Image (tube, rainbow, N blue to C red; front, side, top):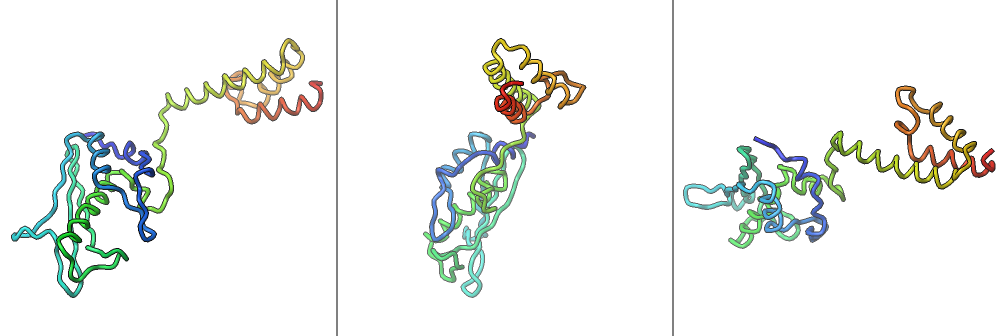
Length: 201
């Protein structure tokens, strides 16, 4: 059973977030659509009593609704009070109020799987999924290519300058790796800038 929590957690849903009374809301139809792209066989359930009522509570304390979402054999439950536009518990909710609460509860339920979870933690952007070893190597190779290009453009045919930079690189970085195999782009650039100021001497 594959858990794709990180895939959903890193999904940026900001463009679909609506703000009302200082609160962030994600459209349930969008959330469910995106969720099913990751879990095509997902299903959800609205909990009800024996009379098919989906709001549990009373007129003194308010009402709660509950949902369950199942994906790849994993089931999470969520709950949410039936609230008014000020996010206060309603003591006499209508069926319309209950319906809105149920769908909001579903979105919150999907967040437990990772989708839009950062919205509830108050963050502005989603967390990035950890990079794989291959992705890190690819990223470093891109930096390496840029640095070598930068170096070649500066040095040109002046082998003396190149030798100075190469000597610096081999001295600065681990002896386990030669030259450009372990470097930091910003350090290389700052060193070359220093060489420029000294006239390459």
